[in-house]
Image (cartoon, rainbow, N blue to C red; front, top):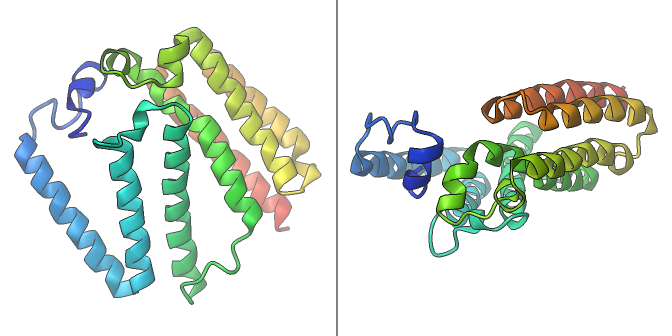
Length: 219
């Protein structure tokens, strides 16, 4: 939010900094304090857990802040976001596995998350087109425009659903993937749906499909 302050003034004026709930210095200090506390909290679980938190924070910093600011580049931006999400998955898995190892985590699941998130996360950029365009953040909706951007993103979302069938090697999911992927495609391309709400609609679809995937795959 600090590095996107000017963009958010255009695209997200309701955020705390834009509404002046916090001053910039207060927000920065709060972020630093919470960062330190997160590392201390991670260390109480284990050094590996703390290291994963540190890697997550580094990815988030490289994504948002100069000199890298990788969010400016399409595909690379969502690929980095997928890596950050994987770190969250790793932390949860190691915490509940009880031995702080990833040995039981399937490579298929890791690949599915990387592909699905890289292709689908541009959904979040639909609401930020005006601000991103003005400040040189070249997202897919900025490069293609909203209409063609919606279409490109919808195709990526559909491919994400279908890729689960093949990566999980579970063909009982085929028609479920077609149904949920098709419904998601229609939602993303529907101009009547506010871009700010599309993410939540798709999250609902993904949650329902994830429940079915888990039920079918591990039954």
